[in-house]
Image 1 (cartoon, helix red, strand yellow):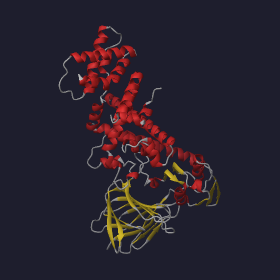
Image 2 (cartoon, chains in turn yellow, brown):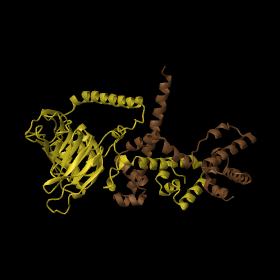
Image 3 (cartoon, each protein chain N blue to C red):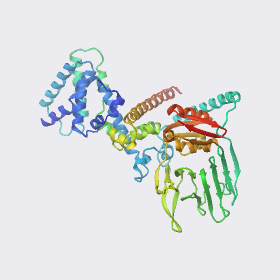
Length: 367
Length: 177
């Protein structure tokens, strides 16, 4: 039998042959080439791919694994866009970026036109995610709140822009802009902080604080999620953890890193809080998973339905009850944008079969 | 002598495959390679050959061109001359010096869905075997294999697509006044 390029590239023995690390493997593949000289070009392409991939991953490891803290999580790439802006020249000439951008713009216009024709004739659907964004100004001492299924854009007195995800609440300190720039968040928000070195901007969430001067970052701190996360997109932020009456600087995040802290189980107290820093996740070269919600994108990457449930509840203003633990623990990978909740559930059913019934805003999932 | 022996062991298969690539049968190719190494033993080899693989392939290509001429074989011998098969060392040197190439591979890699990147990262960066990845991720052997295989397939498609686009745009730019 002869091997394809893919079969060769993923074969452990072939990799050892390419890296010349094992005499037995070298002999094996030399022997293969003697018997199948017609495989020369395939072997050479596979060899280039193996060496290219290994070298690229080593060379770009600073973009791949943020720290040594969590090697098991250091699996995802950071965006080339932000990193190349730090002193590195873009690898592609301007026309290529332009071409891609124009294609994307053309595709978006086409989509909008299609949607414009199609949507008015669509029969009425229930529980679609609300994409209309309300814009408000929130003053010192006030509280801004978004309902489930609602995004809200808030401008603070210092012209910091905050985009609140569904079911979130932001309390602004009474002395905001005068003595401090403290805000208190429950839920998820993307901050674009106005620059002010004299008054650092501090976001307080349940277990820690995020201190910034002028930067863009996403904070996710829902009370019913297992993890709280802070993802840095631009600038620098410090993560402050409480120690006694004071705060200590746990870590200064770099662009494309996120700080993750699991929420200890308050009932059993079996799991203790464990802070970690890891790279941001990218769905593809352009779409960052942590901030996908801003574009009304729901991206699930190998997540159990028990976690997906919380996101769906917030996005669609529904309550979901999963009665079967097999279904609750099944891991799904899927992407949705502007789909009705019924369409989302039907798509998930295709991957792992379950039944559901919907009464008003109550959804029950069973096997 | 010892040096040529070790070269014979290391590169015989490759040279034989190159001869087959240019239309010789397996038996003919084997004879050509044997004769090539026998002749090498008679010659004085330069002292410092930094990249034996590339040196041998080039010398062997010249041998094939000589044979081609003497046997008046059909086809153009320039095909042999322009046949480019970089040695392992040349591939690595190219990777070390060509930032655009690394960015090109990196951008193709970044376009892969996370589940593919995850296993590819574990295999080619962390150096884990497929079995070890199965143990670490808790995924089935078939899933890990499929993700690796699909990941490499997508990666090749991205690399090819980008190369074709680049050539097309270069061509169009050439047409511009």
